[in-house]
Length: 235
Image 1 (tube, rainbow, N blue to C red):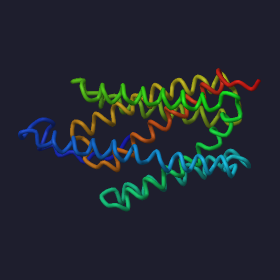
Image 2 (image 1 turned 180 degrees about the vertical axis):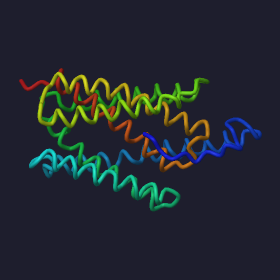
Image 3 (image 1 turned 90 degrees about the vertical axis):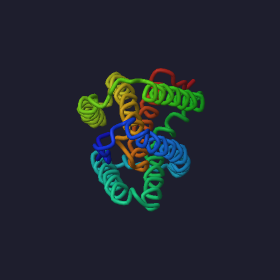
Image 4 (image 1 turned 30 degrees about the vertical axis):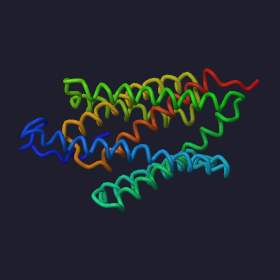
């Protein structure tokens, strides 16, 4: 995702005796810790959503989508505003709970398969593997991946438009294509966002966590969508 950079141009990565590198390591550790913590309200929200049958899209899909986007961007705004305080952390965790609620509809559909629990665990394992691979590349690679951001953002917008169109088209083949592209694009976002932290381009761990969380969330939901389409067992 595209976020405001807090980098200091007078302190390039690796200069001043490792000052920026030490700071970046602290931000990275805090990002990983908050990202792990954010999974708790996400799972809780998904569980509550499944138990209560929560869905924004039971009535009008368009109105549901508009409501979702309005709430999500409202969270983005207030999280960014309070990112330097504990309030920002609390708001981020509240947002991840909301995203868990939004995930519950898909989770409920997958659990309707005989192998639903297995599909969810497979998607979780695949997401963890992708995250681990991207984190490793971001850490060890000397290549600068920041120039990918603009292309990834354009790709994300195209995926979003196609996903909105498929709310009415309901084409499984199009959903497969969207999901495959989303996995590639959001995996790349994980790489770009983590490398920006490592190189000192992002110095706020709340903002960093928000970006990485959204990418991980989209990778997981895309994997789960593919597995549900091609591997769901209703027999």
